[in-house]
Length: 338
View 1: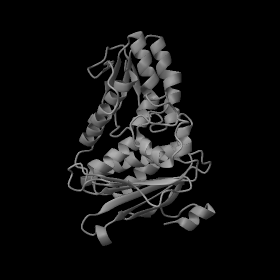
View 2: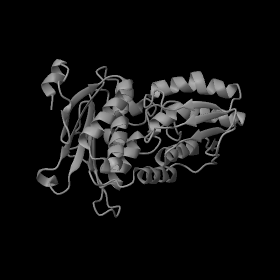
View 3: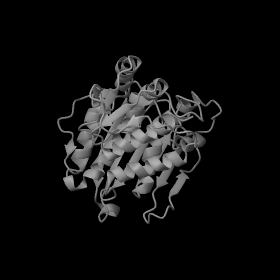
View 4: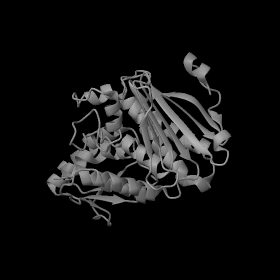
């Protein structure tokens, strides 16, 4: 699995075995996240007939790596490894297993930044799976310009809806979630005993059955609905338009800095918001983007969307895939809430 090379800081000759394993890899820069997520998902799921499973795995990897780099405060970044398991207990039900770890401050300390009342590691792990929970803003809010607090919520719901498994371990506690294999909603969620069993940093492991995802877009849409149900009701405005834009609209190709939330915030501040202040009509062109995580869309559009609403300037969207549109609609629901 490449442990010796990782510890010694040596470059790997081979990333892994196609269809089987992806060796331990350290990620320290946001711009490396997308490339590695794409490489891992295609290495372990090379069959194009399982494209929807591949897209789901990509989404999970992007969110987990971004969390490690954005919140852990580990100067060495995060470490990822993945494998396809079709032996032993999984011989008749192959699964993809991916794990991301860091040696940072842990989930409790991160959440205490904005939630000082949290003092228990188990409570912190439980709340980390709620929608709109992050150490970057208080309970009851729905995000900052960079963070929506939706990453682990989406991944946990993916585990439930695919009969997968999620292990969330951090300093002081470990949480295990098993999705119901009968798809009747009887999921198993429990803390590993004895109390206090944890990990020196944060470790997240996700297990996804290879045949569990038949429609990625429908999966994202269902999770969006669940997030909306669990977010306090408030007035909702519709300020994104999906019809053809005016001829003089200013187009922005969204794949610039894709999945780099810091780059996305920079684009929002230096490009999109100035265009809106100049009262230009913007067209967001999502051409070529099958997948776009909630975290990235939040960083790119949370503030511009609120600015557009304040100035009464609609934002047009073109060439958007159904799964990406679902995430845009979720963002609009909470960004423009009354």
